[in-house]
Image (cartoon, rainbow, N blue to C red; front, top):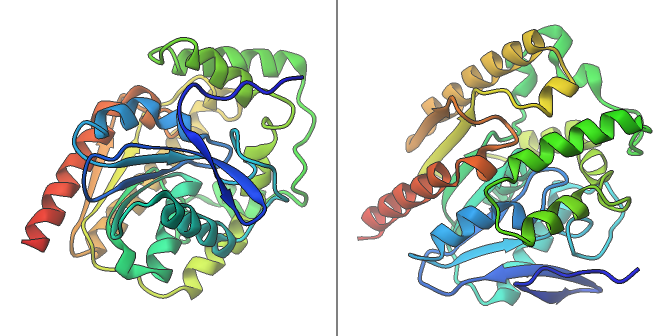
Length: 300
């Protein structure tokens, strides 16, 4: 079957793989969007379009996701950040960057900041994964208690997939056609549906990488969190469990930003963990704008 590529962007050759990327060239700093587990660069399209009006914006698919070539999953944070660095260098964007990471992507950009602090001007973390996650969760919600023993996604009933696809499609309602249909089809394709499970299968090892990686650089930092619950979440957990998880994550994000000299936590009550970049592109773009202003003040 012929693969239909996005109507924007191009492919970079990184080592032996093709990676999809779209980049504007409007100014500095370059804003780089790193999706969560199983996410695609195009999931950030609405934010990307807003940010390109004022500065350079980059969305991309890391190996094994979206329209990029496949790779064996899961991977270490070192492998992912080596790849990201090669992508940015090949794209022609100038460091230091403003890195935006969602969920597992938030973990990756924190690791990038640890490894290459001089290349990071600021951090915007959207519901980020963090090595202290389990310290703020009740026992039954700790990741250490629920880690899968394999990176293979379990077989899902057709009724569940139909409900999940319907709820997922609703979250992309504001996206333009035909990109909306293209994204939904690709997310639920046989080769990409298991990607999120595969990428997150080694999350405890990724936490260990962050713990051993040293401090994050002292740069402007905003964490955006969502205290809402979406229809995809209620397919996987009870509302009580979700409320307990949100309560714990709010305390975690407050603690992270309180410990960061330039940290700020903003909670959105009309967005969930998954929907922040899809349904609140305005809030993400505003946080990008505010961080750029802080970066300019530091550089002045």
